[in-house]
Image (tube, rainbow, N blue to C red):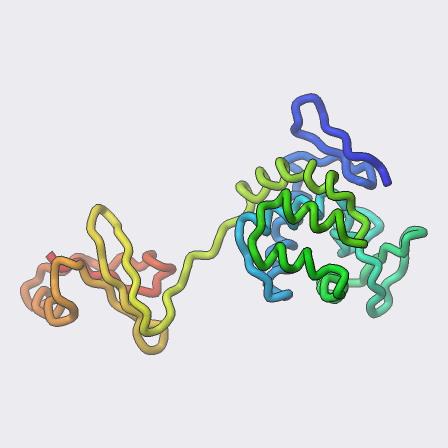
Length: 232
């Protein structure tokens, strides 16, 4: 395995396979998006700590994008549907993006990697996940993953957009906008309403409609789930 070398200003790294990377390299955005898809399909949590961990791991391995380990960012050796080895270790090249994801998820399902999955489930700090990876038989040195955390953190900050929380039907939640706090209640069919806490529920809203004191809806609150009406 090749060591990872940093440039003097810390903006570039070299992976195990020797490919130079930096924060503006499009590979970093692809690694972030692949991590989101992996966690989604594996039904693992998606949070900032885990995103940094998976991107750091991908970066340390250096596979999957623009090299022989096609669709295989973590360089797994899991054989799947016409894949073929690219080196003596048996790292596979896959025939499709989905096959690479499926093979990676299958590999992570082995008992040897339970500590890694536990670390993801817990949203552990990336340094701890890096240690779990290094302690496993996967083959990525933990120190190498740790060395990639800083650039992974910057990449996640730049390319990862956390999903906005969507309230569940029947669950109330509070939010504040323009200095006014509102009670939002999700209704049947995913629709809902929001009223200022200075008034009393829908009756106050209906009275405000009749009086003409209701502000226009703000459709972008909670991804447009709510029609926000302000009761003065």
